[in-house]
Length: 316
Image: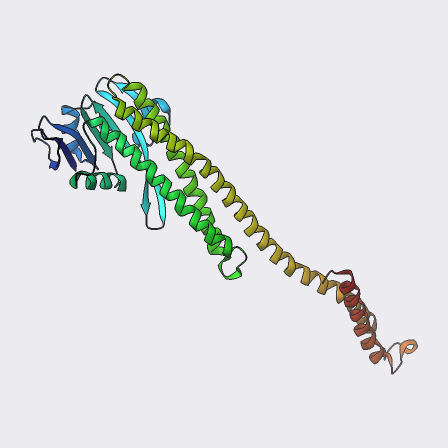
């Protein structure tokens, strides 16, 4: 599907849907392409770009692949977070900037794009050119990453109270692993956004006005202020993971300790039972009617003495 955004003469924005073969108005500043079919790809390649990127190309991590200047425009690959129920994953979007036209490509839904489209419908976005759309998407992305960090703080406050709760140990460990993965995605998206903004500022230096430069600098400053939080979150997650694993190991050690002590406590009685388990009837030299009660008494006494000794040593 292809959506178009027009900047009308009265500076208002208009959203519409475009199909292959349609004539594009001259005031279109943004084409948003999501999961293009073969006809849409062919139409776009003939009309605008050398090659519509596929999903594999949008997953490239090399800087030369993510940020480059080509004969058909400036190409930028940018990572956007996408929430899915209780999970969050990164979705790569490809941007091609041609004069005053921004073309975005994506294979999945991106909530930030929906938010921007909502801003446009309600006239809440200060958009005067195609590059404003690109900058606003990056700004909204950083805002969302900041919200994800705030949610992570709240979640970790909850898991901190559940670490020593035996009934929720598995759920706590699972949540901590999820938070560590989320924190890594946030960090990756922040670094990617910082590189994208620096590339935009350098590449479009000649056409950026003071307002746009200030916007880029503000977002870059926001990124620098957010980055330390990701490190703090990582430390907090690792601490809780270690504490949870330590508590689990402590509980296991207590169980093993009980079995070990039990084995030692019953070792003397076992030895006595082995000795007195001999056949007294056919061993005349040991044929003694008090042999059985004596063996039972020694077994109880040896077990009791061993238990008292362990208790005084503090091993129980």
